[in-house]
Length: 462
Image (cartoon, rainbow, N blue to C red; front, side, top):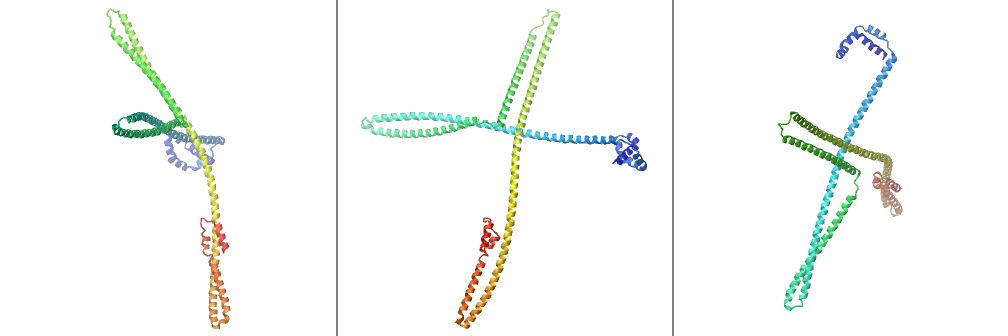
């Protein structure tokens, strides 16, 4: 590296005169085209010049350290700048999300107020219907009293001559029918009133519950912010009204001044000095009114600026509250995420344990299947051997039977012994063939039956 540095210094010294006469673009072209050919003409001189270069190594190392520190600082600043840009973008996204949440909460608040207003209107309608039903009940009671009075009169009229009995009976029947109808209407009205009272009671309980329920933190904060905004808006409206009144007063004064000026005719006998004084006074009054109008404009502008500052402060406060609530929600979600991660780790460990147990069970099942297959092969071989023995014994039995028939009845006992032996061999064959249906259950156990019970039972039977 030191030799490369010396050669670089020697090249710069060798081409110093040409480089100092060029600008940046010319130096780039010179480095690319002319310098290589110039250095290749006399490389020995360039190497000797490089060996003759003298420099302070401590100063070079110090410059190297300063350059490294400067680059590291620039890299850290770039990293910090990227981090700040990322945080700025995240904060903007969070503010947008909070604004959307605020709008949704405001919509929910407005919807709740609309629902309450609708319930109040329904309650008012039900109360009005209840009053109408009460009035109807009163009219029905009055009609009932009239009917009862007519019945009493008819009972009193029964003492009169018998010629009026038929008419009285007809009238009595009609009045009784009307009385029954009135009682039915009264019963229906009472039932309707009972249902309406229950409905009113339910609505009153619902209204009471809605009044007593405390809103959540977000809605409460929004209500506080809404109240603050309304108060500031009221202050701004009051200031605007004051400014408008002041401007109207100034305009009225200005119009009055113009009217007085036009109504006063110029007197010819007045000296010129007085006329000049009056003109000067009028000019001063006009300037005074102009200054007052400018003052009113300035005050209006000042009020507008204060209103703007108030709006910006309100927006800032709302944004700070939203950021605070969002930070609380983020902390809560982070805690929830940590708990979910811990649960996931526990479940992962449980899954690994279950997988290990399953692999052990599968290895045991494979081993048991192999043992069952070996036993099945052994039983098959035993059955084949027994079949061969049975076939040979059957042949011998047939031979003995044939020989017995030839020899006569003297050898019947030997034939019976052979037949008993034949039956024993058949029983042994049946006993050996009996476990064969159990083998498939050993090789392919049912998922509802544990492997150990079936395999143990099959081995005991075998």
